[in-house]
Length: 169
Length: 453
Figure 1 (cartoon, rainbow over the protein chains, first blue to last red):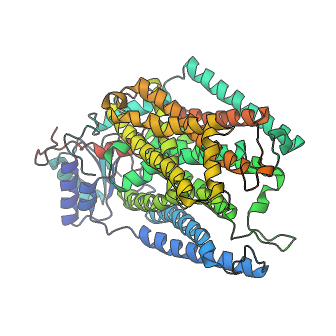
Figure 2 (figure 1 turned 45 degrees about the horizontal axis):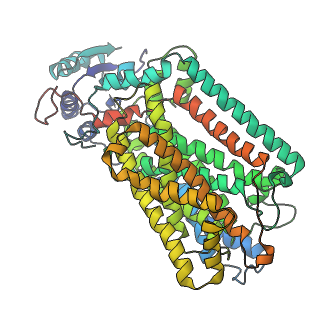
Figure 3 (figure 1 turned 120 degrees about the vertical axis):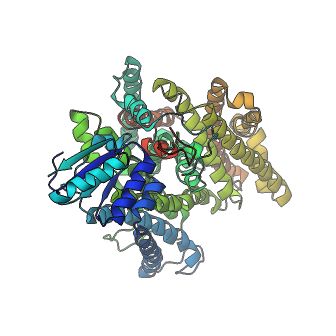
């Protein structure tokens, strides 16, 4: 894949080597790194050091909205055509718990998926190089940098045990 | 995820081998047997479509519906298929929260089974209502009659529960599939490349994606866990909220949930035992996984044994003639054969799993799983039919004999389910690539963490 973001792409076969390289890159002032891995890895996550994802807030607020929507739906619709059923009050809250509960789960789940799509899209990966080995057994580290910095970055990555380094103009 | 070094569920392959082995299940040329299986499922699906079309034309009389038994094979089969789905969510969501590593190898197949089972189940209330073309009256929508559905009815709760369950379980399956589809996309060509590129939603495994994805997966599991417990509880209230002898019991919700998981694991065993051989993934889905699945079967089967005993005890202890008569007739009435099939297949056959030799013998496990499927269908038949057959007034008692329309639609439902499952396992990763990789310690340069290569 051709890249339009200039920088250096390194392949790592060892997780500790990749994590060490990421830490040193961050320490030397390199920001906006992109780290590719075939599976979620806590060691890499700690090295990258991003704050906890805000997905949980989407889940929480959508869940609460769903709960309110479920109860409101049942209360409003029951009152709109007031019909006594089984001698129960028109607004029989215990009967509406199931509706409130199901919509809590439904809204919460859909918002969680939406959150992943929206939040992931907020950081554009367009123009950043990718390699099919990253969904197999290699860890990828892309360091955006100017052409004059590339040699130093390459040296740092190779020094940490990168098995392959490519420069993208 | 931390993995104990000697944990037998930890795969011994490398990341590259996992990708290669799972890819082979998709890219290898389908055998003749696969096409025969697909063809059989398609024919059974046509049988379903044909029977339902005829039923729509002729009406429910074709299914033998007659007072007092207006719920019969279709409601039985609805509950059966919803129940099947529960094991998938238990394994994919609940065991995920419990950090049970053995679930990883089998959860994708069980999750797919859940979605297809609920898709099958959802057909049956629609088939059952008679005027299938106005099924949308079940939904709360603004209509010309200014009427809303009755929110105090458990049948409406069920509409909400099942539609939420179908949506959430499909979402959970698709979200889990995205990284794996991306892995497949990167290693195939031609039409598959185009298909998987579209389905992978631009996934690259970048840290910005994993950061949100891993949290989201956790929350989806946390939401799916109470959902799965609620769904079969709501299904059980379709019965328990009615004042019908044999139905009106407080034990129904936990009894139904345990039964659902039991039946679902039965179906998992029926599907996985031949499938792992066909797909050549015996090294990934091992005796260890079947041993654990068997222990879950034994646990839920024992709950059923207790529930069956309790139902009889409560019927006797209640002093209610109606309850006592209903349960007497379940064992010794005209449908005694169904009652005993249910008790033997569910409560007693599952007890064989106390023996480890049986738990790891896949032939005996497969036979037991067939008994479980049979027993759990009959459990629902006994609950639905025998209770309606023996209401309060003996004068109004009745019997029902399932007709060809019942049997064809029941058989066809297996074709519909099987068609989806057969298409799925050959076109999508049936073993979760990224979760298996998450369990395998990645190669290290330094040996400080004990996982050096």
